[in-house]
Length: 335
Length: 261
Image (tube, rainbow over all chains, first blue to last red; front, side):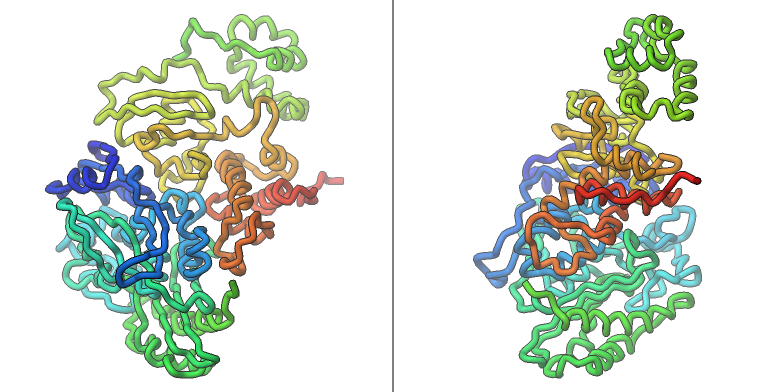
């Protein structure tokens, strides 16, 4: 690991000011991804500002503003605590399931909610510093495009990058229309809708989010919804646990009798960002919640898939996974 | 690196162990401390099964921190030094670490606590699992610098004096290991898991996460899911699950292995 200066911030203001104007400095939260990438020489910060002691761990009901009645989850709370908080389990079980589908007990005890959003791809070519990678070193080319790309994207990729985004938590947040609140060095806060938080690779795969340099994730806001009775996070992977998704589906339904009044479907393991399957959602609204309609929606949702040489299986797997996740959501979880 | 002025002082229990097992060596041990010859001899006795009853004492003898001057590593070798004070197995520790030093390397290389193992060093195997402020974490992905004021428990601190932790005793009974390399991490993970179950934490295989009714009774499937962050390449998984289930449920679990007839 390359040498770096370590400091620990005690308040939010000094943390964001400490990072201002330092392009090679980074915040250190849980460190579960960052330290690994530093050991691999993929990340090379010259300074780490430890933000684990900042008072940004609360989970509380939002009492004012557009998300009133929803839930605010502190950016530096631990994944374990978010997944097991009574309000999250009761009102947003989809988020609990998605967090618990990721990593291991040990890692979820370390990883923070804000840090989870900023996980970087596990594309093996991104990790292997001897290989070309546009995300790691812009302009060097994409090794996966013509390489072994079984794990890679089927939606939204570019010639520059076919990597997929690894977080499970974020797939649920995408389905729940979460909002990310961030603060900059001047103390200004802004709110980023989840759909705009992560980016498709385009010509700049090295830029993965819409965060500006030096901005700190202070909270994730969940709008109030009626999905708690009918939601499900399905994760399909090469081994039963402790592995990244080949495909995952976050499905949520609001039902009026057996008729679908609202539907949310987001997929992981298929794109450079959480992939909202809007065509499938639109097709379901106003329809009966039946397996036949779930199949129609899944087929519509997967119609634009552009698989690579080794991941053609993901199209059929994605199709079936959407149907299964919707069925599980329909079966529901009583409080 | 042994500091000649500070020989090991054996406890009464330890003296009794050596007196029982190696009476002819006792004076030698008392004069010069336990050396490699004694260690090998004791291990041979252990191989014959004579040591089982005293294993807790023996383990303490061999895992006790050496009295090497660990806290005074040459400062020239440390870049971006960070002063850090924290507790390890109840003892206050204060040292200057290179900012790059992980908690795992600090435990092993600076504090001579080599029970925590370096398997992959990338957060993929769980061999380095320790308990920080009551939570199981991966020491290979934790910077020592970030441990200021924290309380760390390692495998060396899991037993209460000479009494094994119930999880340790169950691992012995159920043969929850073969080569033993992953075992310190497995045990630390399982010890913390007991508290998580008491708190009522959910897992990915929990049927209904909305239902939270205090302490949860874990099925074997739940234990496997919750222990999935600890890889065992010998494949002792059925025995590990049996050991954890026995302690968790409080009911005897039949051993998955038997002596040959």
